[in-house]
Image: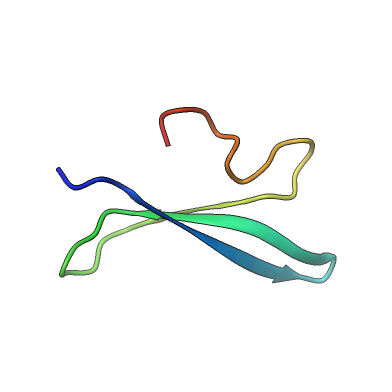
Length: 52
């Protein structure tokens, strides 16, 4: 299995820009991905534990 790729991104909102991480498996065909966005409480986009 290929390693999961993590790319940093920014999401613009009415309250300002938020940090985000885009997680996906590299593939020549379209596959689902996961976007984690910072901005709720004290957590951060990369504070989701060691499994990500």
